[in-house]
Length: 218
Image (cartoon, rainbow, N blue to C red; front, side, top):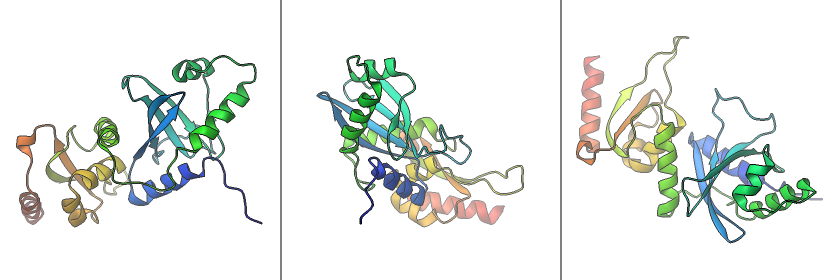
């Protein structure tokens, strides 16, 4: 007898693929009550305390037509967790009902039908820009921007080990400089540096030459 699939199993599939790539976030579209939402699926970092031991991902819902409005929560395999029902109902335009458990269950069921069953790398412009905005806010290894200006060696941590490239920086480099990333990805102690100024962008050849010179002089 086949085991029944958990309602939000696809979130775990996406999370596992993100972790395999050492990426931080995925995004897809969700429609509810004729309103479209951009959904960010975020991986818990190693240094981050989970909201629950059963939590698999963090979720951020953003109104597609009102990008400054968002709702953040988390999910396990079976449901989306709502700590503030009033904010939840207001954000999604849900009228008050006595049985709130049924409301969340119905919402989770509809949401589950929009979750892709795999990580889709090639995104439409709106979704790609949402990923870019998130990575620019959370990438601690570099400045904001999508124009690669070089690479740097990460510092040494307190325990004497080398600092590792963050999932955010890893994903940003893989998206915006895929060929350069492929050449340097195996050295996880390197981070990629970005700028918002397109005039500062360097070619792969220039970045690799500079990096080689740095290593030879160190």
